[in-house]
Length: 264
Ligand code: FAD
Picture: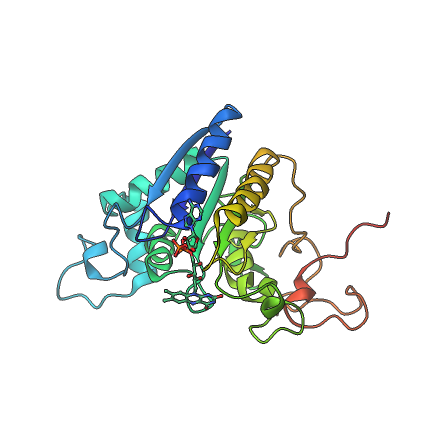
């Protein structure tokens, strides 16, 4: 497989850097080809603005979606963005790796998504009409590709449990897993989350590294999160609300968008 890791940590000699080495080494040992976009090392421009659309006249009001759509179609996006889009086309599997900062991804990675996910590439794909909201949530440019997150947190697993004060980790990561990965068509694998890492010792690191190796070895076979496809019949048209009666009794919130596991 071709694997792209988008890595967002400012310090290569960090826990995240060490885990990146574990991931890359394990994947290469399996015969996979790996590319890493090390965003801080690349001095990635983290915010989308007028400079992203060099052909838009200075006196024209900037409307980001339409500028993005036009420049993507005409090949006018900047070289750094098109290089990342090419890496996404090349990849069979994409991994985002980052420390959890303020319950979200670091801004540099969000900026990578804002800029690389152009209109016509990651959104605005497929037919849009009164009854169809295009190819998204399970369909789109990334159909057939797998994706997953590698995340480290200072908080304890209990803090991220169903009743934990930070909120459940699957809820916090839902906007990334469902909104950023499933939306353009990726098949999304459960995340690898390393909790309570700030005072990790060597023994703790060894355990973590082995857990990550196992996830990297099983990348191709790990069962994905069974998110419901937008165009699979589970949602009312055109409101895109989940049809009633499909969920297990008592299911609310983000969990509604995860299909029931198949009967055993
Ligand atoms: P590092 O600081 O590099 O290392 C962590 C520990 O691992 C250290 O003890 C280090 O000695 C050890 N270590 C590193 N490399 C190795 C190695 N090779 N072998 C053995 N041990 C090693 N946490 C939350 O839970 N929720 C939040 O919302 C949140 N927000 C944050 C916001 C900001 C701005 C910041 C700075 C931190 C936040 N944190 C939060 C904590 C953050 O998630 C953790 O600090 C981060 O995940 C740790 O990863 P790191 O790579 O930076 O670790």
